[in-house]
Image (tube, rainbow, N blue to C red; front, side):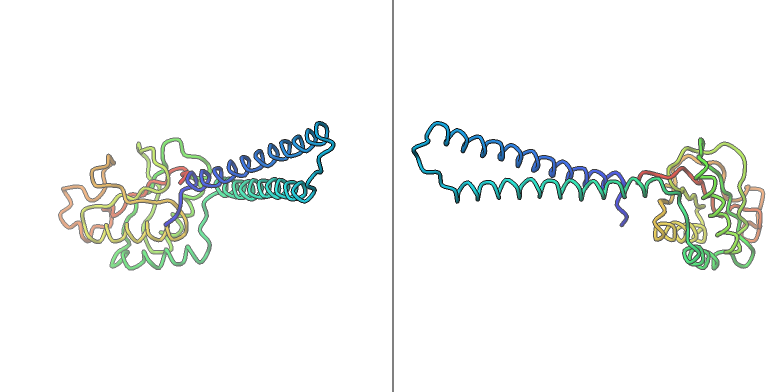
Length: 226
């Protein structure tokens, strides 16, 4: 299961906040500790100062301050890593592309199945480039994959629409599972989700062998935050 960027960021931000609290507490205790012994020496000069307790108090405050700084720095470094990861464009390595193509290839027989592809409304350049990369994977799996025109939906990640046919649903699941395994956000769109036409026009009786029937509709959205 892939944790969302938001949840990971929130976790590290809580740790950084904890580090800040520990640091502030250490600084406050150090001031109180130093102030107490200054007062003790000024107002009770005839009383012997317990130097061991003073030393232990100083060491405790120093350790507390250092621990707070360490926690804050550790969390801050991880927050930077997460933000850097969020800004990286989606990409499938050569091995990931080969694995995804191999998973989809069995569903492209006996004739190349058709997968219509679209970009989300307001797609970024990153979404456009990743969509082209995903189209290449489908092509390598012997799918007839092309970007089509027309109105589309606003989605985050990759939305995969399937027909009611088992083959379409199995292919859609293989595509989504392969993307998720590669760390790419993707999902099967629910059957009642609004969508443009997918499948075969009713006039086509022999839809199982009709190469112009759409088996999958893949909408590439912008990179999600989760």
